[in-house]
Image 1 (cartoon, rainbow, N blue to C red):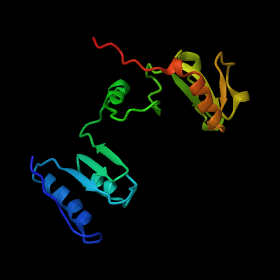
Image 2 (cartoon, rainbow, N blue to C red):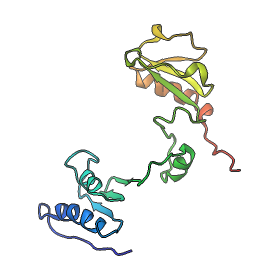
Image 3 (tube, rainbow, N blue to C red):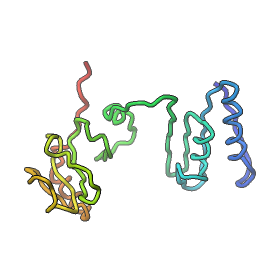
Image 4 (cartoon, rainbow, N blue to C red):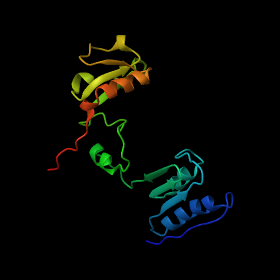
Amino acid sequence: MNVVGFAGFSGSGKTTLVEQLIPALRLRGLRVSVIKHAHHSFDIDHPGKDTWRHREAGAVEIVAASPRRMVVMREFETEATHDVHALIARLSAEVDWVLVEGFKASSLPKVEVWREASGQPVIYPSQAQVLAIATDSPGALPEPPARPVLDLNAPDDVAAWLVDNASRFHYSPPDKP
């Protein structure tokens, strides 16, 4: 790989030049990644923000880093199916909890979040992995759950329930075949 830095003070045009170089290099059949140093904090993937501009220009991978944050964004040339266990294995920070949003068909123990106003069906009747339901519409649940019903609008109560039931959420990676 070839690596080149672009240096200059804020407002000098570094981001614009990099944004223009990405498609120019892609037209030559080259794959391009970007590393962005953010001096302060940063906001990602919104129109006009540097990481969004680089991604829209065709960068395959963007790493943005500031003294307090780092993010890695990868663009896939074809759609990819992600395994939640492989994603968990990629985490590098030692933490007490990993909150996984989505992946409703995974084998992870989970709390179903349901609002009647969404018009979506519930998943708890058919998934044993659903250990509780967080909802703002408990009276509208289509069938009585044999699980705790938590108040979606009381995150401190949901957190307390998680901590009280932490042993049910202890993670062990699945055995590899």
